[in-house]
Image 1: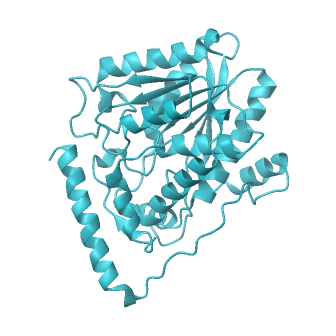
Image 2 (image 1 turned 90 degrees about the horizontal axis):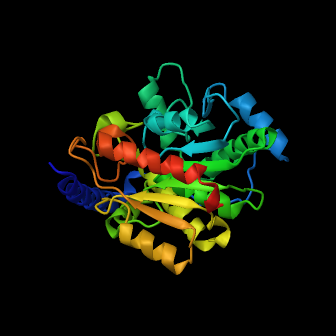
Length: 336
C-alpha cells in the first residue's frame, strides 16, 4: 500500500474510532483539563539553576546528549537538534554526524516519550514504559525541555565564541520556532528546518475529533524502524502538537526572520508545502529559503514523503546534495 493510500486508510480509522468513542462516552474517559501555557519553565528560578536541576534529574531519562566535533581547527558553531513526533531520536544521527564532521558541536534532544526519555518502572518492559510516558506528553513539558537544552547550547556557544544553530524535523521544528518567539532571551544565528510542522494538511486536523481521549493510541503507519513507539501515537501527543501550533501562531514574531533553509517534499502527506510558502510570503520572512526535495530512485518507497531525514528516505544522491546545501548555508557568512 502506497503512502497516500495509507493516509486515506488512517482517515477512515480516525473517523471510525471517533464514532465509537462518542457513542461510548459513558465508559469513563474524561477530557483532559487544559493547562495554561506558561511562558517560562516551572523547574527553577534562574537559567543556571534550571540547567543544574535538569541535569541532576535526567539520570533516568537521558533526554539530552552531546555529540562533539573531532575536526581540527576552531569550532564553527554549536547546534541544537530535535526530532519529530514519534520518531526515534537516533534517526537524526545522519544529520548530527554531518554537523560534527563540519566542525559543529551538537546537543541532541529526545523529547519526553521518545528514546530513553521516559519513566522507567520495575515490572514494565521499556517499550510499554515509553508508551505510557508518551501518553502523558504535553507541549508544556516539551517546550520546557527544549528551553533547558537551549540554555546548554547557549552556554557552550558563548564559551567558545561561536554562532548558535538550530536543526529540527517536523514537530521538533515547531517546538524550536515557538521557543524562539516565546522566550525573549533565546537567540539563534541560523536554522535548518526539515518539513516543519507549522502548516499542516487539513486531514491532519481530523485527529482533533479524538482530543477528549488523550490516552487513546492510534496506530502509526509507515516503517517501524522510524518509530519511537511502534504501537502507535497517543492522542495526548497530537493534542500537544495542536496546542503548540496554536501558541506559535498566536505569538508569531519577526524575530524568527534569520537565515533559514527549509527542506520540503511537495508531496509531503502531513505538511502543506504550499501552505509553508504562503506563510513565509505573508509573514515577510525574506531570509528564509526553500529547498525542494524529490526522492531519488534509491529511496525506500515504503517511507513517507514526509520523511526526508536520511539516505533511506531520500536516496543517496539526493541526501548528499541536501547535506551539501546544509553545510553551505551554515558556513556562508554572507547570509548573516
